[in-house]
Length: 366
Image (cartoon, rainbow, N blue to C red; front, side):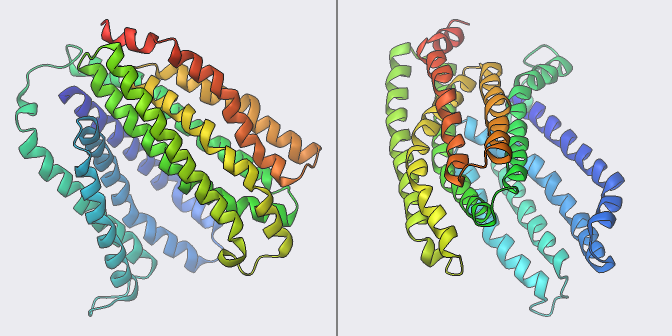
């Protein structure tokens, strides 16, 4: 536990500091080239100067939250967010507009509010870590003998997970750039539905990540395969209930587009309604794949999971999106359906690996 926590903190802080270094070197030139005026450039620089503190705070806070989640203390990260979010909102409003006699900092005030909220969040998590894990830092030695080897092992384990998320982000942005070649109403519909897919889909993703945490704990405690099967069966059933809830939210968005987006054209609303069949099906294979992927990650099978995600994105979704948009000019509903086809493509690769049972025997037998 000590090795994982401190290795994670070192990796996160190094990445955060590298990011800040890139911002300090190239940020001003990039802002100057993109800003429409000197005033906007100045505001952006003021905002980034303060927001740098948020980057460092997040690097620490996310590691501490992950530590608590992995140890089963999942309420502590929840409490930290419940504490920091209202502070962020209230402090930002006060500092942006200068209420209660304080100066009005404008855009920089929003960054100050975020920095204050992150400081409170990290302070709370650190306060809860010290009394709970005072003895942890007195444990002699490291998991791999010395800290350097331990850190390298930690990086080697986490790189495939990081690569998976980085690849997903880049693939999403590339597809969004391709969507810009759609008809105006189709592009508007795709742009409007994308945040809903991301936000509502969080329900299934968080269920899968919670399943991953518990599977890792069961494996670490050496539970037998029957116990693992029983838990995973119940988690899978829960995933289908979560997928059903997501599908209902999608249906609600499509059916209530007239009220949610009153200023949309009739054609754009018709396209949104046409998305509904795809959106009603999408959460089920996506949720099941998430259960498989996160369970395999919990067993240490991170490289296989990375391959399934990366190749499905770059050998199917991105080129297929370019093909149907740039060459075949198909309706937007068929473009959106590529998200469903991608999940169906990953389905046998994930489920075959999980149902083989090697993930249980590989960890329990060590």
